[in-house]
Image (cartoon, rainbow, N blue to C red; front, side):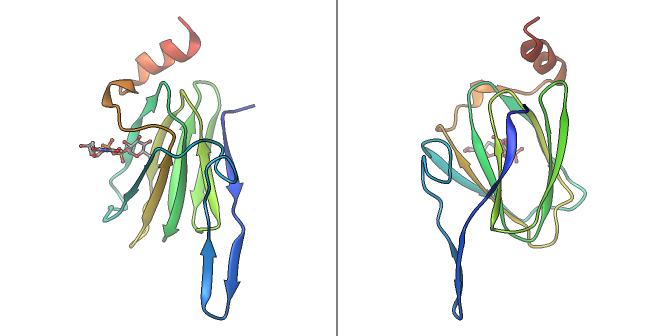
Length: 134
Ligand code: T46
């Protein structure tokens, strides 16, 4: 089983619009320690291209759309995020890339830990070695 999957969020919609609530250990499968958002992106300029040794995240496209490629060293999944009602859970030790950003894309990210730049793996070959245990 790959360590990534889509999450469905319940939207509370009425004549005024819609609301989605995200809560630690309820519809988000970890304690949220950090929230950041990515915006003002360019369609042809991918982001990411790294892995995390010890971080779990949920990515939600709250406006527009983008694609996310996740790679566990064996299986590669590509997801289009185009609704605030779905999130992509990205577990530990996964190479990720975000690309094909639409105009106005806003990607909200919930993370299980504070920002620790030293736990990033930024070289794909190093990632493959670590993930295969070699
Ligand atoms: C990930 C994908 C989905 C901070 O100072 N604090 C933070 O919490 C983050 C996430 C970044 N930064 C700084 C570090 C860089 O100077 O913001 C700048 C841009 O970060 P980065 O190049 O890592 O951004 P992305 O879009 O390539 O990757 C980010 C996350 O870093 C990463 O964890 O999984 O979004």
